[in-house]
Image (cartoon, rainbow, N blue to C red; front, side, top):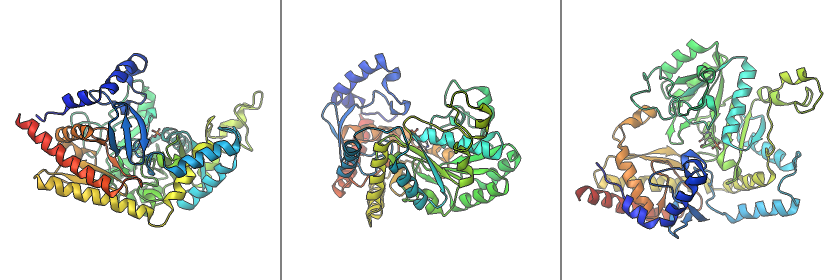
Length: 461
Ligand SMILES: Cc1ncc(COP(=O)(O)O)c(C=O)c1O
């Protein structure tokens, strides 16, 4: 049994404990997103600066969560602050509630960076982007079901809250995984319309695709599962060929990977064109956003111009039945788009992403040698600016491979790191930013060394 550093955690983070107790009275579970909870209680932050976060007890951390990957320029990059301030001051308003120029600028930018995208719609989150992608696919193919891969996360959509983290006992067979729902409150109708596929297993995927081809509107995947388990090239190529043959739309959920593994997302790394792409996170420069893009004939289904507006009271309701509904009060928010455009402008600077990827690789390699020097079986897995640390000897190509990882040790190390000034929600993946310096990398490696020794010492006592 690996002991964790709870005692020190509770000693160091008293103000977080106090706030959490208060929060629990008025916010279910004390957090506004389930993912933000961890035991004994999450850390409440009050300030961010570059690669650093400072909590309500004045403890400073090198941040590797970066708001679950959204902050690729780090906290409070001066260009992003300036761009958003300027947008507010120059326009004189937070939002127009009408079309505006930045929507066109960003849509054009995305069509240039992502060759699979002819047209774009904006949303306020990745979840909403996936929601529209699915609705468009069902309308386009006139089929009812959606395929998703075991271990992949696509936001809070009822239909897709399934088999994200199933365990050995309930996941079914490797070639035809069971549906394991991750939330209560999902209707049987919704459950009946999602089919689970095995990631990186082309043979088994082909069998299931052929079996359900008449019902499947689309299959959605994270081309890099969880942001850190890359699809094999031959798997992605095979999936593209099969979906074309079987008239099933291929949806890439690039909410994590967009701009983080390459400016043009994982699809540019694999050189594959999905039919629809969902984007989010980095695209908003730290502000809430999602976007979907795809082939014109698919996207145009949501164009209401010629067909009618569902909100025009008294108009012919039949006219809107052929339109795929998409709306949202805050869609295309100008301040968010200003932040997102400035983020992309920064990332387009020569060598910037290359340097970020090189720094990420340096951290990965140094951590690997550190753990090796302690004879701990550990691998880093990832792509571009995202990676994960897995205590395992064997290959990791899909969710089931993670069942063999030493989660207990990983959790113990993560809890130590939270006491040593490295922030990551325990067991989560690492994201790097352009604000992380070589000194941050040195300090992180030192903190890991310290964490390993603390875990060993606790085990002995
Ligand atoms: C791959 C993927 N899709 C969709 C989402 C949902 O995005 P949001 O949290 O903005 O709704 C996430 C969020 O982590 C994600 O990682």
